[in-house]
Length: 151
Image (spheres, rainbow, N blue to C red):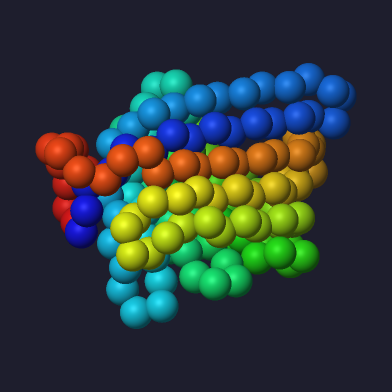
């Protein structure tokens, strides 16, 4: 397991045209197991889900995102496929549907560098709909102390 720095940019464009961009730089962990690569990081207040830990399991054709903590969820991104799930919050469960439009996996497993880019449409209980883009870049891999526990 390697300590890494991640730059995460999330962009949301709602159906009514409003745009929201969240940018986060955080420490994380990187490791490979079998044919999968894993990225693990803690969310902050900036991301809106402070105190949660996010794990990305990345394979050649899909990305599975699991969020643990006060707001938990699991989303599977696979190009051209819909995924229905629930977003569990302290205020109740919200039905969520994700349609993945594009996945770019530019991670170099040999030196734990690179990027992920995911474009997807999202619908929350059919009430809030939008187009999202999630870009994750691995900035560096050495000289960091660990703040992600349990792994």
